[in-house]
Image (cartoon, rainbow, N blue to C red; front, side, top):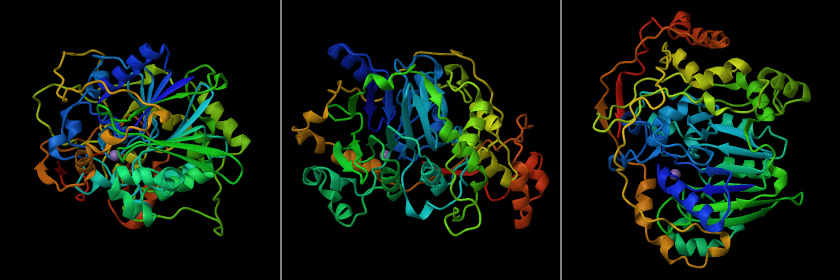
Length: 495
Ligand SMILES: [Mn+2]
């Protein structure tokens, strides 16, 4: 089995697929799977651009929209996690993962998926200490605050991953696990990225929860992106196992953004994308721990009276397997829930959360809650029913707006002597990482009340919680005729 790993994609799917295809031709190989470590930018249309935390000058439609509309089909099965530059409104439709376009699969806020006999895990977003313990409270329309906090990693997702006991082969995070710089050629890294010195020396560089997961899960490989540079490390665990870590650059000419992984045939299996039973059982076991409050919440641990170990038992796994029947994730389940891109349409910040049938079906099967639906219900709002947009509806050939790039040469780890070019675009990548000020703009379509078609059986428990807090009426939590909560004026702070 051969896997291509990409660092930050930044919407450059055309370029990435070109790279992979030219590599296949040159080497006479077949790549089975492409994995992308965040900043994927699954931007479907102009509105989605306004749900992405980037400065206005980066509001570029790039190339994902072609794969969403059906104008192009991803030539290689593609799996990705979220980073800090995403169409967050779209990723929020799929908290437990799903197809964002035919042949392009998002792993979810956190998740584990199988490809053949290979088990891949992912953690989306980046770590920010001040949001780590918060509930999953964000929803469109985003404020200047929630536009950023929406992609900050939450403890619940990390807690869920830490319940896994079966071997994870490949793990992905967007930011690096904290401390990882100490396990590779740190001096070389500092020569290329001198501004990282202070953070590395004070052990502030990277994500503490990713570090914890790396030490607990001990995957064979860990891939990351975010810092826009290639860096390899080897972590030796106490039990004799090892994790090979590799961070990759973003997709730019002459940058080390793509890595081919050649795995033994024992991983091949059926080479189909499948749900992971242990992971789904963890989701089911921990569903009651979901909080959608904009406050810190704490998860159970040793010393409390309630259950705190949610590693599924064999019975729990068997039960989940019986609920799903078929584990293969069929490409057919992809649904277009938002309009395809049309040039020259105004960029309006998304006001409404769209219900994605992929999430509805999975939640129904497992009897788990869609966090976004619960967050909205708490405010007396409901999700917009998807208008299902037909395949190839009005597919027009649209001009590529991204800057033309020459085809970058794919690299291998042995290929890391020539480092001079890696610092050249430093200032550019720096500015991209910077979180900047926003301007406020009016959102002219208020959220509509929609008759709910899909019911969620566990919503009652949240209405109880709400009644205790004295907010709204419990009616408003179940149906949608009551006015929206005043907490979210129809005003959106966007870029
Ligand atoms: Mn990033």
